[in-house]
Figure (cartoon, helix red, strand yellow):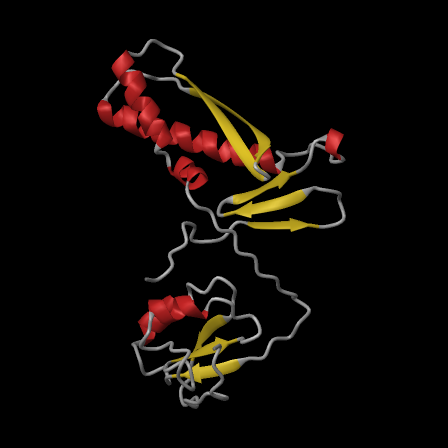
Length: 228
């Protein structure tokens, strides 16, 4: 099964010499994240805990609004307050998030019960209460990775083996082209050009890229190295 990221473009953060102040880029702009003064920051933007709680609150509100509008209920204003605390039990860190939902106008007991269930089912709630695995990969832009080219005459796929960390998703996404048990591991005749380009565009690390060939460009690969 091919991996499908929730975001078309990843969130990107950068930090320079300003202590704790980070610039976060998302699909439509930038904002600043910082730490409060008591923690050594300048409080120029929300801290990471605030951002986490904000994601939960905004997802709750959007999910409730969608359901209320679909039902045609007259509930024009909803407010959510979110906070969290941590404790240790049996040497395991436990995080508890408290979410207070205020409808700011009378609702029936039936509506309150149903909306409580809907709030619990908001996507971010499911993430927080489900199993989370954080995978970390490190890169150094000062490195000059090796480039290996594979071409079908129409397009050339460029592979950087030193950067490659997710070859398995290529194999599951387009097994006719990508096979770590074969040499070379990329078979440019295994699918049409559009399918190859679509799969290459899903590479999250930049290990794979492509360019369109000029007329008469050679259909060769530099070597048959495999990520396996």
